[in-house]
Length: 438
Image 1 (cartoon, rainbow, N blue to C red):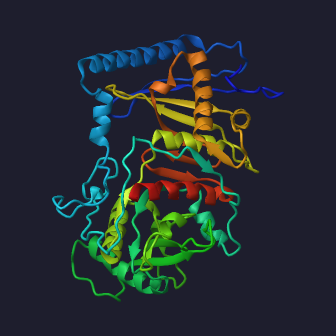
Image 2: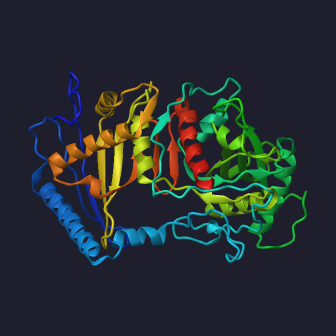
Image 3: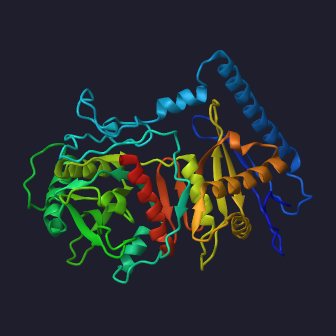
């Protein structure tokens, strides 16, 4: 089978999967249809697959008619009204009438975290935000020439970062943060966490609280020599076993970094430390406590970092073009059909060799990726899918991308799978975090 602009390899092998899931409120799966395509003459098959395709077409057709009717009446579409209702305010700063709360000061259904900003970012540093259309992205991105970790990287700590699901946050520059005081910060944060977990009971700093917080540097995580050293924060519960060498149990982890963030670092005063990207793994209650302490101590604030469908498409294209020495996983795209009473997801899986061959045909200049190439890459996949299932994926919403390099969800969850491309992935995420706070 052929794709627009796609050069068939000598040994063609193309596997596609359609997963249509209709879920009730309790999450029960009503039906699950899969179709597999190999040769070009194969039809997506069977009565069940045909019925699922017709059902999705009907839903999308009804949505298109509703959108058209709303446009004729001059009213904003239901989809856009819902997006506006869910989208956080564009200005990250707290306003005078907001009661001292940032947008993370409101508990949302998406995160379940209640951050409260007790201080305003008022140390003489002002950020200006450029208001653009939703899903803004540069027209061109340069692929880092070197994605290798530095020689002083700790292999154990690097391995600890991989294959875990991390929740993304952007962080404004921290005021008066000192790398020489990490032990003192660990002691103070340990007492703060213990106090919050005991619901405000008095806790004396220095006592054995049963909770241990460790702040340490993550050496080797730098895109340029000007990047600040990454910081790892871990919360551990002291072991109750009577053995001397009993290990503490790590219950929460988070880390700060700013990879290739020279543009922001060079524009802030010396008293500020730029660690714009924060990744957390563990209970959200610990994330809220740690975030609150950093906000109060260093006059910064955290903001949940979501990923737009446009940036997910960039990730799909850029990561598909990366070379992996080990086993390559299929490139999988998950789409959501919006504005229907029941949740409906479409999973589109492409064999890694076919996805790589398509990208090699689309990419014009090695070492850089353009918006035009990303659009062409996605349009080829959409066209191929429509040819066999008669479904316009362009009318749906891309919510998740999975490749051999990493997987990312629009809610701001990411799992990095390959250490060789760790710097490259973090460079892109740092760019998104900086664009959100500027």
